[in-house]
Image (cartoon, rainbow, N blue to C red):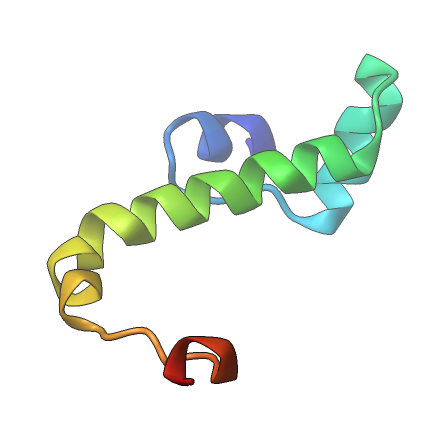
Length: 65
């Protein structure tokens, strides 16, 4: 059930799941957590992309001078 929820995008990779997957696949938990973070960032970017374009970056002191 845990993997089925992840595959169907009904749930993400939790720390618990990352530890289990890393043990099974002989990887690191960070690998799985980074995949989850990347997915969340890309999903958010697609959802709020137009709003992000409207945000003006703050000027650094070197740019203001």
